[in-house]
Length: 111
Length: 117
Image 1 (cartoon, rainbow over the protein chains, first blue to last red):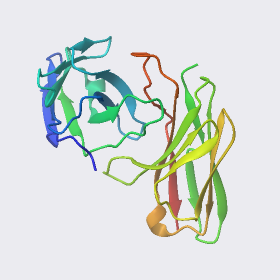
Image 2 (cartoon, one colour; image 1 turned 180 degrees about the horizontal axis):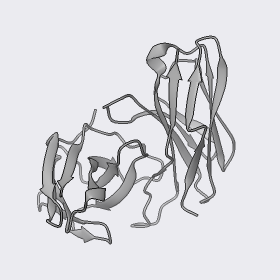
Image 3 (cartoon, helix red, strand yellow; image 1 turned 30 degrees about the vertical axis):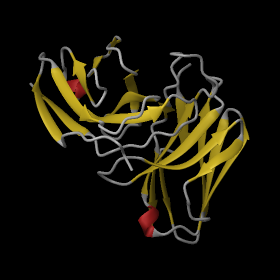
Image 4 (tube, one colour; image 1 turned 90 degrees about the horizontal axis):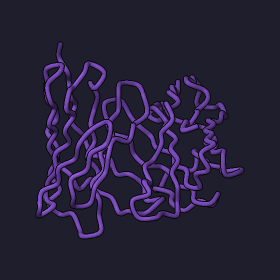
């Protein structure tokens, strides 16, 4: 079973920041938080991952609370192409550990 | 090349047919995965291969038979499927041995959309 809880859907105006929350209250010390997204009819795409520090890459920022029980994915300037289902996944940092997908958040970016 | 390719894109088959799905990557990844995704549901793991050996089988029915003939190829052989097996079948690959923070993200292909009549 997925170890994360996400809101089923969110809307965001184009050009604004999209903040997607995720609860993972049972996360263990050696588990990382990963974010993937799936644009309609495509395979999932890796976005970012982190352990306890905040992380940023060219796609997004990941903010993890100090107790690590929740996190927020931030898309700083959402575009229509960011409309997708976003999955927050808690996972051991091991090269062939499979992903266990929860239901995700369907983000709709509106013009 | 950071691409995982899957063929065919679409497949329609009868319940008595035998068909195969193919997945290929040239990123040097030694872990490869099959996931199944029903409409409006998240992907679910089916199989994991590590160094061309089957390491995880999520109690998948024997009508699905995976094969990893070499480090770049992953096949899924289908036989006597049921209509409820209609789904998007996703292949993914990743590195196995990791340095800290090396990034072991999984790269997914576009999937094969399977319809069983």
